[in-house]
Image 1 (cartoon, helix red, strand yellow):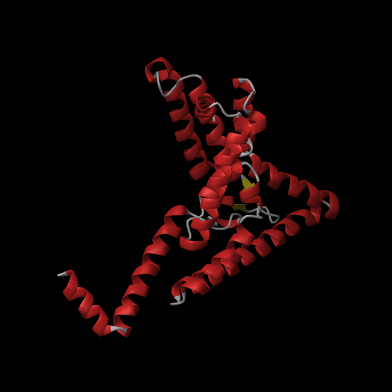
Image 2: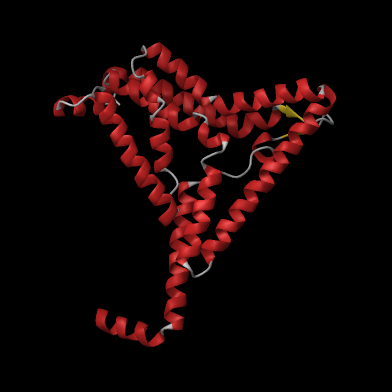
Length: 255
């Protein structure tokens, strides 16, 4: 955002309209990319960029606090749901109610993903686009997308880094950079090996929230791109098998 502010000042434009226009263009590109090629990243950047507008004038300490809350937002949301279950169903039934809700969510996710995968494996591009539009309608209304999460956390840390010229003067901020690296490694290690020890089922047995509570990543960029590349190759192979004479003429012309 600081660099966008500089660009707006250079053009003599008001910052907020200038920034919103850029986000609007990014959102449009993101929707087209998701629907046409299955790239489900850019619209999320545009959406989370809106959160930066009310935060842009905050002091650094408050931006760091906001980044921390953003990083914990999905966990806080889950804690809120568990508290609601306990208030509505009582302590004895709260765990079962939470597990039932999570199971229903996982089943819904798998059904949406299965329909999308089936559409992307068939030959009609129009059918694939329609399936992606249905997937988008589900994807962009889920808590994992609507809540701030990791994207806004990185945006806020980037704002702090640009504000204090960490990228321009890295040697001056060596301790800060190393501190963030250590924090990231420790956080990853705790999430990978520590968190599975922290959750207990209603029967008193240990279980891993990383493998039992969380559904697969709804829209991993690498999986989406890989699936698009594989689907494109499969379609090309089917076209060559169904149009052998054209394929031979094309190969001869290319040679």
